[in-house]
Figure 1 (cartoon, rainbow over the protein chains, first blue to last red):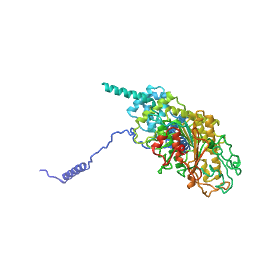
Figure 2 (spheres, rainbow over the protein chains, first blue to last red):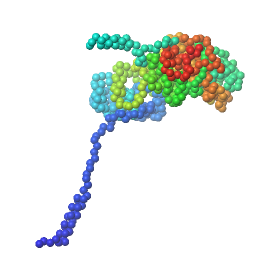
Figure 3 (cartoon, each protein chain N blue to C red):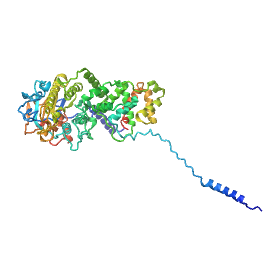
Figure 4 (cartoon, each protein chain N blue to C red):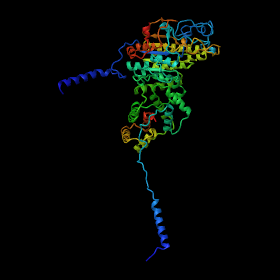
Length: 167
Length: 443
């Protein structure tokens, strides 16, 4: 008859301790994930109207990729105040910017090379969001159907849009 | 389709065919029913707080400065001999050379003078509001659009006038002046507002830098797609709340205004703006551009604001000079209409009324001639004169006098409405100061 020696007891104890250690410390593994959400899609949150100076500053940055000085912004604000029809004032101001050297507008060839990319980039640049499929389709059709539609005219219409007045 | 339905639909279609040509841009079906007394009105808001004593009462420095020299300094507007000495209101060093009268016959002789009317406010902005709204709302804020409809909106809504037929030419963008071209009244508002320029800014150095070099786009090939794309973007904008609407200028009107602006920048650069002979103040240059507006657009209503007289807070000498120049401006306006704007000559009424008067008692400020200055807050500030001249206005007529007030400054609104044929609509709107009447009804 075999008897448990001290050595056997020690081996059994180590085995049980090891089993206990391994099983008792095991934690459940949780993996948290989120569904992908396109944050650039929604325009309904734009409920604050830009001031004249904000409008001019953002427009200049969008068209020239440079900032205007506070003195320039002050003078542009005065110009807009001095004209009763604000939309007309903005039209004149935008067309002045379009006439100045340094305005950064893609060429028609660049636009035609990848119309979808141009549309998305224009929405991102001016409206800080992605276009919906319907918007992409509409502009794609507009660009395809009217040879007079240039990137400059598209930029002009975005700068003149109501959504561009809000942030 | 049975016989009855056929007759009903045919009748409706026929009615539509008859009515459609009469639907005005304003949306109303028929033009205002009242007969017009003239086709054009020019209102001069004269000119920043004018005391009766130095204007219609012709006391010069007799009342204000404890002196004895009296006389008339409004050469174009009023009859009366000018001061014989202590001339400080003209040109040259010390203002010793008065500006010669432009008109061969004063406006007093040509029209009707209301020697003393009642102002409804001693302040500028509320005074200007009373001239344009026919009322002064008790809750009207100083940096707030008019609460009640302005005469511009009455005319455009009830008379069907296009936006470019109503103009407000302001001498500044300060003091809330640009806010006065339309109200925020829910039944009227911006879509019935007047076009506005503050020409000293629009066509001044700032405008020259940021507005003068506008690219000219082709109206069909380029502007049409721009507006089409803008309309699509606007429809897609899921905005809930107030989106500022425009003045209702049509694309053609906008093109016209842009062409006018281009012309003004050219004329400004060439020094050929129709300024008065003397144009050494902001008020006078403003009037020069107002003349250009009238020549170009031939508006039904042109309102011109001047405010140089308000320098009287700190300089009585400057006040006299500014008032003399305001008279020069009015004379030039009237002369220009008669001789340079064929479409308006003989068919225009000019009205000039101060928005408020000034105090009887001076403040403590002395000017370069040691003359005391005047603010505007007491009962003397509620005393003003008024005058009108032109088509259908009785000539050489004087109404009321010192101690016999006839008329309220708010009368200006129904007066213009009567001249342009919408008096009944304006009176019926029920938003005028109680007791307000057309000045024609005061005669």
